Amino acid sequence: MNFDLTKKKLTEVNQYLQNIDRKSNVRKFKIDNPSGHHAICAGLKDDIDVTINGHTGYYCAGMNQRANITINGNVGTGVAENMMSGNVFVKGNASQSAGATGHGGNLVIEGDASSRCGISMKGINIIVKGSVGHMSAFMAQKGNLIVFGDADEDLGDSIYEAKIFVKGKVKSLGADCIEKKMDDKNINELKKIFKELNISENPKNFKRYGSARKLYNFKIDNAGAY
Amino acid sequence: MCGIVGIYLKTKKYEKSLGKFLSGMLDNMATRGPDSAGFAIYTKENKNIFKYSICLNKLSEQDFKKKISKYLKKIKLTKYSDHVVLETKESPKSVIKIINENIKEVSIVGYGKSINIFKQTGNPKDVVKKFKLSSFSGTHGIGHTRMATESAITTEGSHPYSTAEDECLVHNGSLSNHNNVRRELIKKGQTFKSENDTEVAAGYMSNKISEGNDLKTTLTSSLKNLDGFYTFIAGTKNGFALLRDEIACKPAVVAETKDYVAVASEFQAMAHLPNVNSAKIYEPKPGIVYSW
Image (cartoon, rainbow over all chains, first blue to last red; front, side):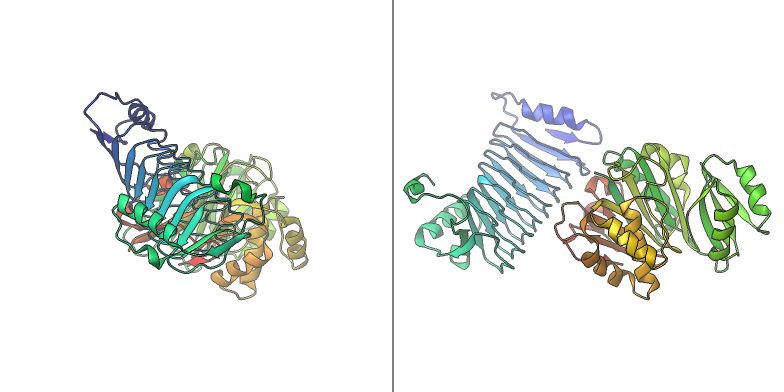
């Protein structure tokens, strides 16, 4: 099923996609002419495939649950913010705060992501094939931020228990963020993620960064909970 | 919030459409700033002629013509909504003096050999229509839609700010040390018409350029001396530049093709531009001056 945003209102398209009949066989959708509109495909909750052809504005695919959303273009601030599950693929670049506060699912960005990528992430996997801007993974709590390119200043500032993997250069680490040993467990974790997403990349090329646990009240007794 | 837009043509191909492009960009940014709008558009210069963009306020065009004719011979007046563009060979120094001393009802919004600058309170969608922006051709243009925070919703509080010949600046954000910088610039001889923080940034820029710096060096030095949140778009007769502060909370996106460079707060401002979907689109990095 195809939607053209020059002909149909965005709210109508979003409402349609948010209320899919679970028994319906129509599971593939296409959206043309997004023209930088905000909140395209926000709040989807079914296992459908949506392809957006063009550039989108803020909060594209926000709060996503279960849907597979592909954007053939660039995305504005907060793509896949607060995503719970599903997959979001961005073929171009992403603006700031990509995957912010995401709880689960996968966000794959083919290009660069700008500042504060993965801010306060809570379990999402964010894979950026280009580079990330400053203050990425700020206060990140859980999940994996995997960067194939470089990371700008203050990576992982005030980080909790999220893991950061970077293949390129890190300009500087933020408060309480340190380089950590890349052990077999980490390599296997990355392998699993790459396999699931059909990405051919050797996990051994990455360095791992995480919390020094000096800034927040971490109790070693609770380590099993992370 | 505020929305800022700018477009700089690299080739002659779209010169006739510049006003139409800029008008569409402002229209699309009305959501970010519904209080007032303004724009500067750089048109072909006529070597010996200066253009003065003047807001008439409550004075009629006829009365202004009568008054200015006492002091200046051989003038051309063109009316755009509540503004007129006055064209004369007379130099800025004497024209500014004549107007400030004798026709106090009006205010000079900007002047130069190339720049035309208009601003007004009201929804940007209406403002661009009133000034017939679509009918303008030119080489580059800058615009602003305002959601007022620092000062009242007035024409004086609207952007762009022009504080020297053919220079102008628009700003999304707020400056925290503008009172201090204003005091220092006043000591150096700069004059200000409003309490607005952006006028201080424009004055700072004019001061640096008057000391012989180019636009890029000028904006680079503002990283050190202007404190606060900002994305700036600045224009001179031949130049066009963009700068975001180092924290980069205020958005910006650039679209570049072989024919033009467009800058805006959000991509939707430029979605109507030709071939934009195949343009090189990127977010400008914090603390780096981009200039063309």
